[in-house]
Length: 551
Ligand code: ZN
Ligand code: ZN
Ligand code: ZN
Image (tube, rainbow, N blue to C red; front, top):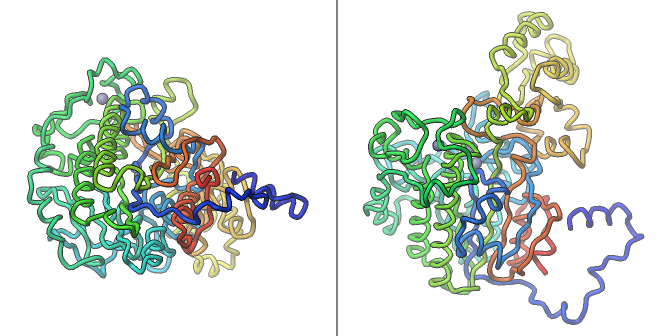
């Protein structure tokens, strides 16, 4: 629908807006739906085709239930790059892109302090639930409100917001600035769920009880396949050269004997990289529903759950691995378990769920290359040697480059001015040099980003990821299938469909059954949820409510 609305704007007064021709029946529709609980589910690194590829293996109560009874946006995309976890979670919950919300990467070079910063870290707070530093987090780098914040404001803080994920950034950013709590996982010798003093001074009783229970211990067991591995026909051979191994393993194959490799892989941190990490997340989500009495009254609460293990498994074993397949089959069971509890405790039809992902992933480029598909790896060393030579030939000893990160070069504007040069000319000149290197398909400059408005294709995607205050001077786009990464496992970050195309499912109270192949974009999710609830849009919203979901 979005495209349709945009084309109407182009033709201005000539069109008759169909929405004005409402029938009496439509006028009687409730102005908002009030689910008792909204459950936002983000599956880290879930490509859209994981829904379709593993479909025949899924049970009736998980993914299939969400699709068959809910609404499936089949053509849902990230509309910015870099497609990574911090920006992904933020964009889903803020209804806008890094150009507006400011989370331009997981880590980025901060021009004002001349330091690398992490998207969720905050030295002003201390860890709660551990003596380690892993709890010093807050959403302070996110410069706009989230849909969860708007729910808190709308309900006079009577609606609760609880966010949780193994990854801190998968909980902190979705929870927003006003969350009652965000929790994440501290592995190592502890295997506990922790938080930050941003939210609380002490973990609540139910979290302490969960941590002292034996729930996490029970996952210290071999990772076997859920079904017979011979039925996993939708993925490649278990043992292949495109997969990484856990430390201490001699082949990347099932069963992965977790107790045997426990000490070599960070003890409880090992669970992150297995399907069990998602089951543990589900256990903790169920404990949160009970412990916080979520969905018990008429004022909507919000539970934001992010499943991180899918990302770790994808990074190690790759899109085409048996490990990824098993992880999704097990996640499907976890979703079924979650929905069953919601039916029982909140009531069938009384809650609203959306499920999406924070980015997709590329098939292992070495595998693609072997199948004759254009793909490969950046030769960082070769490129860096050639680039240094160019820089010293062109600018002598002057230290023009301050930082390179997230495929962006940051230049030292003072040094450039001292050379009596214009920043935009230096951006262009360096950009043209980089464009001549293998693997780089396009180069954009900050000047271009600030002086043009792109509305489709790769330039549009790059511009949505470009933040005037925070982004770099020269932005590189690699060729499709080309990455900076080891030759095993999958990664993400690009503006291409394998990274941008992710599921978007709505299910439950107020959601019609159906599907669309119209393009929807990741920043449409938050305004859609806002419109369903009748609450204000997050403060930076650039997306639009998805009309068919509101029918
Ligand atoms: Zn991610
Ligand atoms: Zn394997
Ligand atoms: Zn990742």
